[in-house]
Length: 152
Image 1 (cartoon, rainbow, N blue to C red):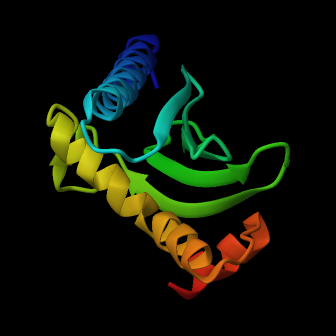
Image 2: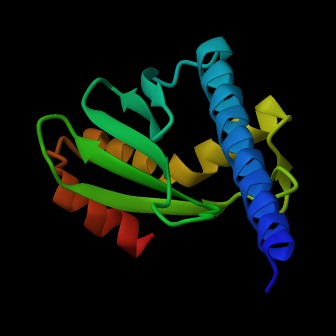
């Protein structure tokens, strides 16, 4: 391989990485805007937003995180949930961000409401578990939530 060929490949890779980072940032902006502008009472607030992930507090007790996978050229987002003051987390969903800005091949990151609906689809099982536990007057730990989510 010549120096020119290697340089062309390196430039292509760097360009794709810039596009992927730009898509991640755009996705995060769309989701944060959708949540903060929503008139629905979801008891969901923005907890953190940075290059390594997004965080949203649910009922000020659970932290829902959206993070890109820790792989070079990673296109997968992991949706996890943590309880306040606990170090463990539970995977509740995954999504793929394409080079074209499409989320799971069906939602473009420019469509703020569609991005929001996609996110709500990923965390819907959490709301269902919280509702059922509250309705029955039962405690809900992260371990119980993980078992409930695995069964759903």
